[in-house]
Length: 86
Length: 410
View 1 (cartoon, rainbow over the protein chains, first blue to last red):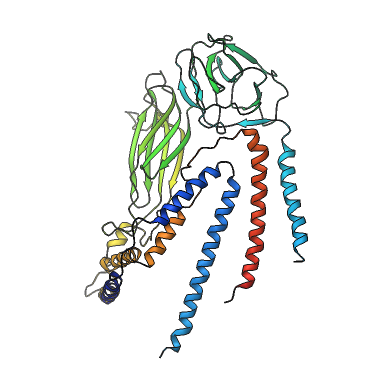
View 2: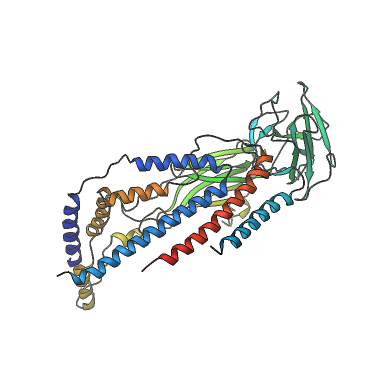
């Protein structure tokens, strides 16, 4: 009862606020670019498999590492700044 | 910059090592053939099999049929096309160590091949890439690998009496079409009451056995069958389907049923000779992305309730606490709806679009062009180059990542 009421109020309020934001575009040029790039990679992969696998692994690892680092910096900044707000 | 010179020497040694290793191991221009043959044509006088992938070719024959011989050959003029046979992975010496026949059909096309029985490794020696993807009877065009069953009566293939061993050679599934594909070889025996049956079903811990089908072998030979299976429940983004997921295992089994043995009508004892398992294989469809918040369907929806009576007061207090604090199904669903809403709104939605798109960045996409490279060039130029450059890339990544870690500030 209590938990359900709290959750419902929380999600209704947040949902109303987030619902005011614009919708994302369903036809994403980014997705199309990735799909096209994958098809090119598949062509090269047939005769250079190790190079393609290495490049993909390095790119994905770098993206994950840098994204995690940025998120950590943002969260840490918020944590440090909150007590100073008056 | 002091480390640059030793690093350059080290990289040069790595590249030299990789090139030497690639060039120094194989001393002859040969390649092993292992894979699955696909039946293409031919009845009566012989069946022809081809390979869809020249690097995925496998042979098998029946040891128990004394008159059965298997034939491996390639079409072309000697010495550009010749065959060798080996019982092990070791190479044979020269062409013609074992029975090496040259057949000539009505179109004056030469076949060079070997009769053999049992499972063997076969090596094909030749210049360049003489693999062909298809062969058609009766005039085999181009160079291709074919596989004929024939009686051991001489050079001319006659009646096909091949009886291979019952086996399942391939068991795959497709999540887009929700079908499982079973390939193999089965026998339709002529003995009264004896049948071979292929059984397919799916099993999950939440939903049990489903999609059971049984097919009886009506003809001896290769089979290629597809079965539909039920998809897993949709994950948490659905608003009407319960959010629970579980691994599903697909089973493909071939049994031999013998109606001469069944339940004894007098004693009621079941005779195990009625049903014999010949071959079985399984494959697992891994869970979808989602959150498993319950171990069973009942646990997901049922409010736990305890007995509340004058003799069990504690049950009343437990029920009161559950009513107060245990969340309802609607409130749990509202969380998943909230996540879906966030994913559809900017700017966080674009992060999910980018994440899903990057997850689609892989090597298994549909290639824009099919590049055909001669095998010798691939083995002796592209493969060592590929290995060398990828090794260098990994080394550069390690050094770059070390430098990046040194500059990180927490």
